[in-house]
Image (cartoon, rainbow, N blue to C red; front, side):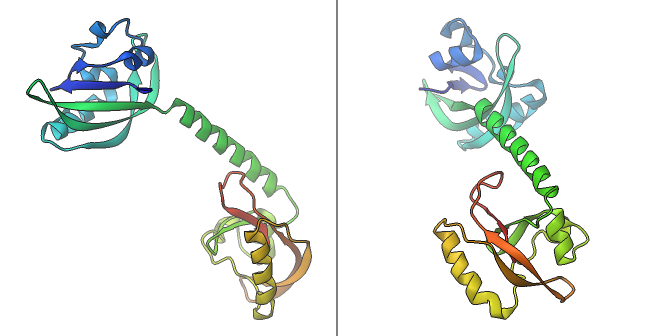
Length: 223
């Protein structure tokens, strides 16, 4: 197995395999046998293991995946996710536990958050209005977009319907949405937009797909 797995009876490990040695730093499987399961997690989380997770599997219930801070034999730590299910071991009630290392995922998530922060900072200093829409709602707007629409701040726009168009513009935008769905870039054009106070204004707009920071969400310069 590519990830550590243990079997424990009443919290005492009775079986493991080589992935446990590689990840936690044990010298041999004999060193793992007899270790208390709660001792491989950070002390701040041991009550959760002893008073919730172990009693649950003893009662024949599964433990859903849950994140823990795991401890290696050299004192180092790593974030991991553990799931467990009831198991019989030599006629005794036991639990089989799988552990997935979340280190790479955490580093990726941090990198994405940092990228989004930098991206948002760049958007906020742009003189052009930019916003991110998904499923007809606004997820993000920069300062210039908020100013054009008459919002006190970008936060005032978050969660609002993304349609700021007068009725006569709807067909044009439907055709441009079809281009967007085909991941085509539409050209810049002028369009009327309705501000929050009901007044109208015209601006140059464009729409396109973008993945930075928002996954498959769709940032756009548009009504």
